[in-house]
Amino acid sequence: MAVVLVVLKAKFASGGTKAGVYYLRKSLFTPAERSFLGVLEPNLPPGVRVFGKVRLEDILGVKAGLERGERQAARNRINRKHVDFLLVRSNDLAPVAGIELDDSSHEEEERQQRDDFVDSAFASAGLPLLHFPAQKAYHPADLRAKIAAALSTPAQEPPKI
Image 1 (cartoon, helix red, strand yellow):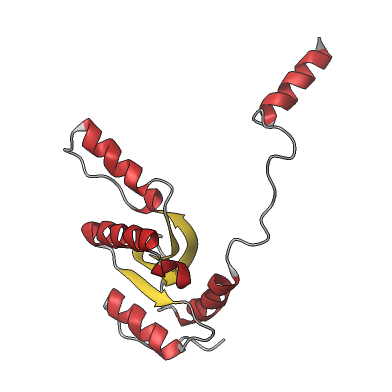
Image 2 (tube, rainbow, N blue to C red; image 1 turned 180 degrees about the vertical axis):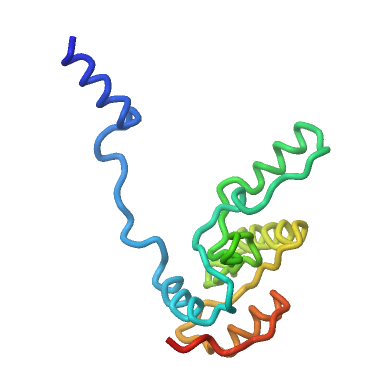
């Protein structure tokens, strides 16, 4: 009896998945995203933090008052989509802006349609969404200025550490 319980417990603890179905990815970010993040973090305005790969459904909600089918359709449109980076206020983690790092895949028609939808969803919610082209090097002053403009805060040098 105890052996059966141990086997059942092990099966349910693993969620019933087969061994070897999942693997650990090497990194949360692509090399281009890691490079951008390395420049982004030290150039954020005071009181702002960054999170990566945040699902749209964790950022955006669907307004009340829609018919059930409309509401579900709206949720489905944001399901399984994410923003590359999300800027939040440090004190309460409230979203203040999203950031998309646009590489060559953003030139494809399907990707452009996805980007147009995400842009309109952010605009509908009143949340700025910044686009930065993926490149080998970034100018910190330009990055700070674009973020400051979106957040309506003055661009300033990051604190020296």
